[in-house]
Amino acid sequence: MAVNNDDVKLIGAWASPYVMRPRVALNIKSVDYEFLQEQFGSKSELLLKSNPVHKKIPVLLHNGKPICESSIIVEYIDEVWSSSPSILPSDPHNRALARFWAAYLDEKAAPRAATEEAKSAAVSQLKEGMALLEGAYGEMSKGKDFFGGERIGFLDIAFGSMLGWLRAVQVRVGVKLLDEEKTPGLVKWAEKFSADPAVKDVLPETEKLVEFAKLLSAKFKAAAASDPLRR
Amino acid sequence: MAVNNDDVKLIGAWASPYVMRPRVALNIKSVDYEFLQEQFGSKSELLLKSNPVHKKIPVLLHNGKPICESSIIVEYIDEVWSSSPSILPSDPHNRALARFWAAYLDEKAAPRAATEEAKSAAVSQLKEGMALLEGAYGEMSKGKDFFGGERIGFLDIAFGSMLGWLRAVQVRVGVKLLDEEKTPGLVKWAEKFSADPAVKDVLPETEKLVEFAKLLSAKFKAAAASDPLRR
Image (cartoon, rainbow over all chains, first blue to last red; front, side, top):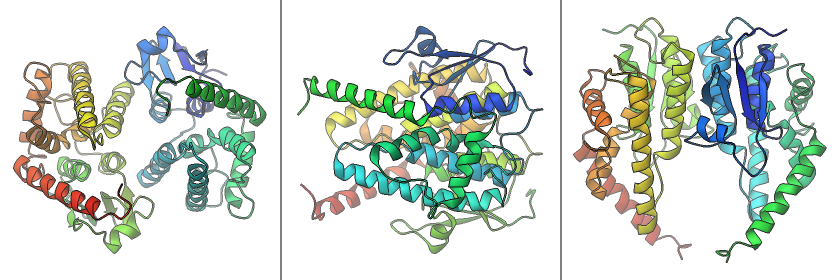
């Protein structure tokens, strides 16, 4: 049941992990919204007007006012619809921890790798990140299912929205990032997160993302091949 | 007068704009703290233990618990000592705006530039950033002195803590980033911010920073010259 009479729109795209964050947050809060999907390879007038600084999705439009940047939008949703389940932990130290690891993910999650050597370094870095997050999960979940405890919280959303791409990378690159032996807590967490009612309809299927990644990769190669500045 | 009986320590260094952020926040809240300065070129055991992921200053130690990342520490301070003047705006949309521009500063403020061409591009980018922030100041201050209105707030701290280095860059590179004609609002804001009781004793003097920058630059050149992998 929707809790809002407000006009809520989200500018995004189905495949973006950053767009998935506010979608999960809005679902947790039972907020109805209109999903305005950008077309791949172009930017709408509405997007350019709503996020003139970065020109990036997601943008939340709340009664016409734009809010940008995925983690900032999630905090905004938590503050505006404050009576529903909380997304940020109530304890300041736990809030700081959740924000710390969410910022870590934003910084480290998408290593760029053009060469084989760089790819191998990127995979090592991702594995190291998973080990750190396994430790953080142990510390923060305290035996419950989620980083946020019994319910999905801020860091669950930040990390969980990347699960589709994580699984697609596992398929494409042939590495195991979520590993029963090395990250047993995260394996269990990923299952619980993916099955949650606020998540399951907005988490893209791995096969669809793998197909999309192939398409992207082919487009980038074609663009690079026709680049007059290419060396 | 101090409001805390807690044990509060800050690991930092006088010249770091990121360290200045929690210092201003603690001053605003009248929280007494011990300032533990790192020595340039080395990292203390306490720092490595307190921030094992990034190994970076600042770290706040509150009754022994570490909190890392300057903006996250400022939010933590605002939440823990919540009865004193607020640092984040109370309105969710204004909070989102303050967080948006603080994140923008973290992303754009320290462009790396090795060549003359890159330096010129970096200066253009900084000037463009100043023009955007002038617009944000007009929108957010609503005729008052600060981004946060009548009092120094989250974005004032995030941006204001960079003022020392901004002025040092103006001297070293010979460009005017804060400009009476192009950014009259920011010029006035910078004066008010620098003179504020919570700020004036922790904002480093421009001349000291210029000297420090010369020292840094000389050390980097010496390190590069003796680098066996240098091409």
